[in-house]
Length: 258
Image 1 (tube, rainbow, N blue to C red):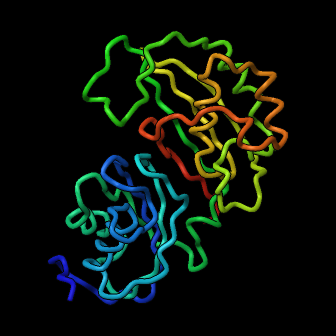
Image 2 (image 1 turned 90 degrees about the vertical axis):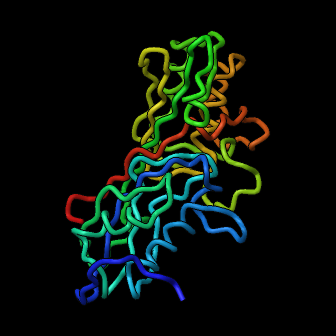
Image 3 (image 1 turned 180 degrees about the horizontal axis):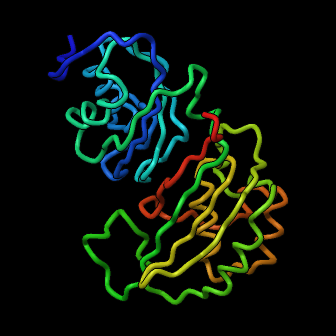
């Protein structure tokens, strides 16, 4: 029997919750529950079991891979008993493990779906160009002290907005059936020693952002080559995949009416 967190539990009627989570991806083997492994979903499910006497239908806006972080991941689920949306972040944070925290919770429309209702997701990839690595940045940036041609990176990023076939930027064993995605924006910008790649799209393939970053950072890649593989080339014609620690899910956007 699961021990429940202390605190008042009220019957509130069936409520669909929309909760925003933040997490450091380093201790976890990604979002999705896997037998014998520590995952974000597993930790969240355990916390929900302790806070809500009965809940169901956990959905996440976008699965993240092992080592990838989130500043604004969104989940939805249903519950009839519990602390209510206003008290849910504090209640969850009292039982979630280090590295995961709830930052907001609201009552959503009965048909709200954290994944299918989202109109876009936004990611940021951080590259540290400092000449010496920092232990405080381990697993949170890609330390890359070698020269980087920012003009070339920006020319590559300018090719990404619009609808393209990203087959070359996801593993060959991907379970996706459709490989076309619509990118709303993609930019590189400087912030001190860091280079930040910011991208927003309707949805993303597995490893898509990391492989785009790894490809663009590779000095052998020119914009013309990138344009060619965006037409549906196989994975073998894409570039390398950047490490997971530099990637952050920073925003999930929903229609104003939700």
